[in-house]
Image 1 (cartoon, rainbow, N blue to C red):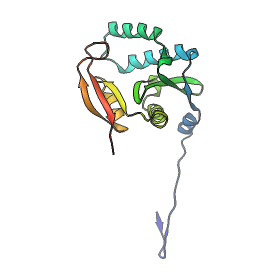
Image 2: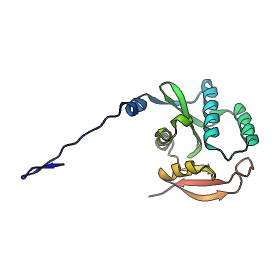
Image 3: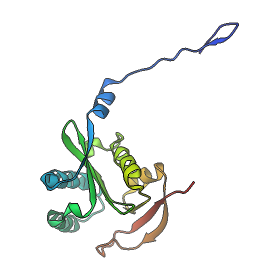
Image 4: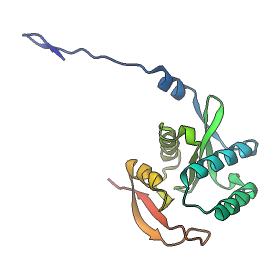
Length: 171
């Protein structure tokens, strides 16, 4: 800020980072349809291999096989496309985030938040379950306003992967 004796003169400087703007300009959120299933499964696999290091190989294979037969249309599923490439997706049921996965190359760049913000606006989501061992996911949800209200010793498949039940903090 530069001052003159009579009144302050304020100068603002804006730095534009073309790569960041370019990425955001070429993003699109799409409603899931079965034509995207292979891309969704690919994103899921890459994401889980990068973020769910606690998952046994046997359990990973079991879930992968189950997802190949899963009808994603049972949920409200939305895909994040960057430069016409599917890089993430979110699945919602009622007001709960049931799944959120990003290609590891796109984690930490605001794309997960973009999907959750869409879910906030379109579905008024306020619940999510997170694997207790997935500390980065817990930090992500806490940062955007969720808090843990309960803990389950086993996941929904009865496996020994504790689940933290989280809800959006009320004002």
